[in-house]
Image 1 (cartoon, helix red, strand yellow):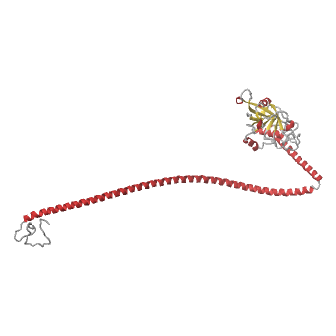
Image 2 (cartoon, helix red, strand yellow):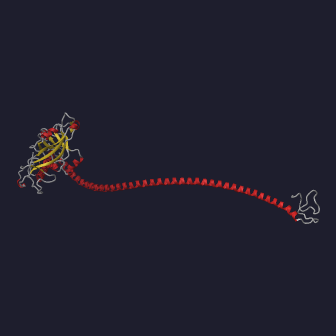
Image 3 (cartoon, rainbow, N blue to C red):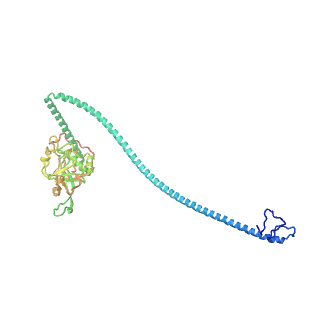
Amino acid sequence: GYGNYSNKNNIAADTTTTIGSSPNPFHISKKKSFNLSSITSNILPLLLGLTICTLTATTIHFRRTMQQTYTQIELSKQTIQQHHKRSTQKFQLDHEKADQERADLLKNNERIKDQVAKLTLLHKEMSTKHSHKIDELNAKEIEKQAVLKKIDHMKYQLEDTKADLDKYTSMLSGKVEVEEYSKKREKALWDVVGRLESKIGRESWREAEEWFGPGPHRVEMDLEYPIVNNKDPPSTWPRTRNRIIIEMAPLDLMPHSVNLFLQQVHHGLWDGNELTANPEHIMSFGYHRASAHKGFVDRALETVSYQEYSTKYPHVQWSVGFMGRPSGPDFYINKRDNTIAHGPGGQANFDDMHNEADPCFGRVVEGVNVLNEIDKIPVDKNHGDELLYPVKIVSARVLAQRNSDSYENQGGGGGSWEGVQHGRKLNDEDKIVPLPANEMPRA
């Protein structure tokens, strides 16, 4: 209670007063008069105390509320910070993941570009191969048609062979008849060979006269070689150039071989070639370059058509002949008399017909001293007498004597020697020379 009084449900009597207590300020006594100042002086402190209590309670409540709010704010702040941290971490992770994905995409892009480039190159190669295969297929088809034609031709030949076999079988009943028949066939064959050789010789004779006049003919060769000095090392041997002159055999004796050699020289086929071997009996000239061989083949000037030979022009010392079977294009200079070794039947290692011989078509008339100097150059005995130091044919040209007489009255000879320009005829004329006599001297 307030002021040591009790006001419990307004039960206390209005007229009684508790002993030793103050009178109730809110009780209006009937016996006393109304005192406003007394009431005011009692109630204001109460109101002031009530206000202070209210303010204190309000302040405490507000402080508690503010404390709770501050706590909630701190919790919210921590929550926001944690959320921000998690968001930042997630953003970083997402950013790193995005960077990794971008890097992977770039790598994939580069890989795809490489694959596209490789596929493009492969497509180009496949297209090229396809074109080549198409060309090969077309070539094979052409070959197939050619083979089919050959098969048909062989069928006809087989029929002819069968007919001949039947004929020969019937002939075997008598040996004498077979021998007589073989002799007749052999004679007929050699007659054909003789006519062909005579025809080729006459055509060669005419061609040689058209290009180089009636003769005589010479070939001038410039050779480059080292001067041997046994006192000095080979690396110091000086190289020099000198010439040799080869005079051709008369056209009425060796027309085919002479014309072949003149045409080889006239087309520049011996320029740049070399002395390939130097055994004891000959000096062998040839080539080591594939392009040189191709030049002879492309112009059909690589070999003679038959083993032409004349006993009137044998392989004496310093004479010149074609080597091999068929002979050419390599030629050699005889360092000694090789009439027997290189004449008819002299080459036992060849499967000759009727004792064939190497064609002998010229003789060295100038430059024997040059050949003697070259003969001093060391050779490799273990490799076919190859020269250890090269001897080159720098150049070669045809020499002829211009004849002012007409072709109908040719005598040959006379006048100074004149070089025939490569690729041109001696007289710059396109006139066709008549064939020589039907019969030529034969060995």
